[in-house]
Amino acid sequence: MTAAVLLHDLVTRAAHRTPGASAVSDPATRATYAELDALADQLAYELHTLGVAAGDRVVLWSDKSVRAVAATQAVLRLGAVYVPVDPRNPARRAAQIVEDCAPAAVLTTADRARSLALADIPVLLDEPGPPPTLPRPSPRPRLSPDAPAYILYTSGSTGRPKGVCLSHRNALAFVDWAAETLGAHADDRFANHAPLNFDLSVLDLYAAFSAGASVHLIPSELAYTPRALTDVLHERQLTVWYSVPSTLMLMMRDGGLLDRPLPHLRAVLFAGEAFPPEDLGRLREHWPAKRFWNLYGPTETNVCTAYELPQRPEPPRPLPIGRAVCGDELKLLPPEDDPDCPPGTGELAVSGPTVMLGYWNQAPHQGWYRTGDRVRVDEHGDLFYLGRLDDTVKIRGVRMHLTEIEAALSTHPQVAEAAALVTGSALDTRLTAVVVPAEGAAPSLLALKRHCAAHLPRGVTVDTLRVLDALPRNTNGKLDRHRLRRESVQDAREA
Image (tube, rainbow, N blue to C red):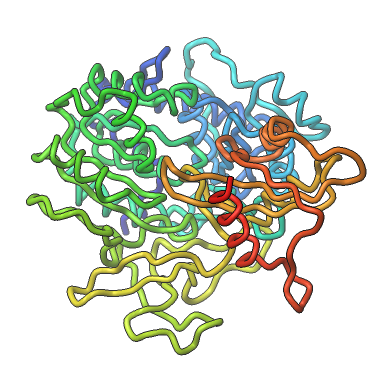
């Protein structure tokens, strides 16, 4: 009986087939598959000596690098679970994740370890070391494909991040579909724009590894630098690009993307937010021969639907999120607050191999996963996204519950109560803080921006501030978001 393939097997297999082929690179380092495989074994041995065993969690609060990628493989080789944390997350948020997942070890820098005030948790320093030697072998337990592989923390409705636990099977169902659909091959050069804690990175890394291709890590300091991103696409002759639409729009607007033919680039994928039809049309007109995909799926399902744009450009229109992929099944359920919704419209539910094991520290997920997204199906069978059924929003591709933003704002000493509103999408997304001041003066917009930087994920910051004597509430005493939005729009028009 052939053993099931697991995520960490992809690098080892590629190392056996083409050991000298380029596997992964960052601005400072390049590693072949043989070197990446050896470094992963070295780090696995070091983690093993710290006491990491199968089923343990290992937090990776690390800058994106060849060593960080090798660390993900090292954790998996021990049968453990890696928990990536955005390197630009404030220490408070990283500490919440550490507290929640109770790791057996943390890979981070000395400065970050001090900011976490780790008492009894071993630390493996994220520092370049000597070239890997031949370590004593660390145990490689036999694992089920349904064993947890990684935990991605997203915004939680309780005001604290929650961990989405995904298995090897969950990831590989998506990776196998993506590699086959893209026709990925060893000569491909994948861009990795997303941070390792963002589920877009799963395609970048593992689809590349499954094909023996190379993946080029784009450091976080370049993530929002449009000219540098365009230069990376050109200079590294990348063939596959995957990001949120706002990144491509920023590159079009300020990075000279429409001035470059980029003949090596053959596939452009995007997800995480709506791509305005007019902007997408301009990009497709500039690149008529390239393939474009709109991918959809919350972190809890990774990608569960996809839509490949036809080669012949169409008039601008809202873009479908497509049909089920990766072996998943879909159905539309009447929203709980609107059982009489029109036929062909409803809340999207997903079942199948990409659906998560569950949230960490909660009961395992069973049955259909209700996405909380309202969709409709057209006469061709394609799905269209209509909006959220709860208070979840997307801010530059980052999923956030308004309640978590409000909880963070409310901890400011000059704020008695706070509400948050989001308008626009992609590059036009704007976050408004509506606050009732505590005794004394209200906080300034700059003060709230600094406060957000210390409490919320990077990129989630206040753009506009409104100060009220009291927040509007409904007859049940709950925040009246509809009235708040209506009054905010009216105030903006009168300003």
